[in-house]
Length: 124
Image (cartoon, rainbow, N blue to C red):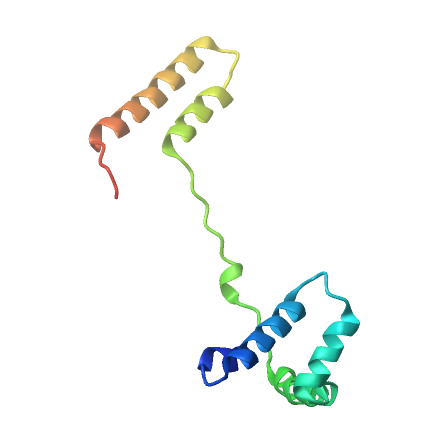
C-alpha cells in the first residue's frame, strides 16, 4: 500500500483513501475489527497470504545456525601505572620503620624516574 502511494500512479481519490486506511492501520487506538476489515477489503484473504509467507520464512529460519564466537573468551585488562605505585605504597606496612621507609623511598624513586623518562604526549 505504501509503495503504491509513493509510485504516484494513482488518482487523488485513491491516494486519499489509501492514506486514510494506512493511518487507521498504523494507529494504536483503532479497534482490531476495523483493521481486519480494512485488510480484507484491500488485500483480499490476507490471512492465507500471511500463513503462506510464514511457511516460506520458517524454512529459511530453520537453515540459519549460530555459532559461538571465540573472541568473547579473551578479555583485556588495563592497569594504570600511577594507581600501581600508590597501591604498593599503601599495601606495604611493616613493623620495622626503617624497612618501611627504605621501601617507600625506593618505590617513590621508581615512580618518579618512570615519570621523568617519558615526557607527556597527547595521543589523539
